[in-house]
Amino acid sequence: EDQVTQSPEALRLQEGESSSLNCSYTVSGLRGLFWYRQDPGKGPEFLFTLYSAGEEKEKERLKATLTKKESFLHITAPKPEDSATYLCAVQVRDYKLSFGAGTTVTVRA
Amino acid sequence: DTGVSQDPRHKITKRGQNVTFRCDPISEHNRLYWYRQTLGQGPEFLTYFQNEAQLEKSRLLSDRFSAERPKGSFSTLEIQRTEQGDSAMYLCASSTTSGGNEQFFGPGTRLTVL
Image (cartoon, rainbow over all chains, first blue to last red; front, side, top):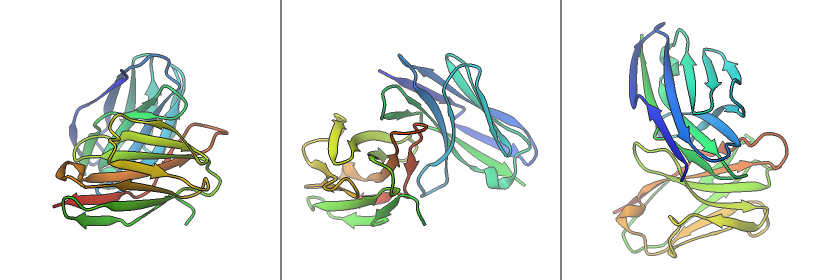
């Protein structure tokens, strides 16, 4: 069974304090690894898809990287508006996403 | 707004009642997914449609749950004889068969069963 584990569960940062979130996975035949952002009471918002080890993608203060067993989401110089839960998901077959439990990031001004 | 829409956004019901939720996907998307999310957890896959065909159902989808996508456009998820354990956020997502595999989510329907 596909397993996705995210760490830490919660992360409290000072504005400008860079950090990284981890997503480790155990799957057979990864088709893609996805990162989403979720604000309280809302649906997940798509951020990135990574398809192969060594791939990197960036969007504003966020950078996602992928190895054969894990992915990292780096937050550079975060701002309070970056506060959210960040979800990692893997896709093995052509449809279903298997999600981790998420990392809740709080950025204090 | 051309994103995924869901209705209602919130539903409070009493145990034993039936409820139905609607999802309207992004217009050119032929794949539609339902997920359920409980507090502190990531979304869990329930079922998936390609056009009007329901191609996969999770074991989480008991016989009290039924989903339809009659014309390959909007979809409905019905829960019969609701139980308190059904309280959750029900999320709908859509994607295309061309391009990347990105799934785009709607705002969700928050169900509370009293």
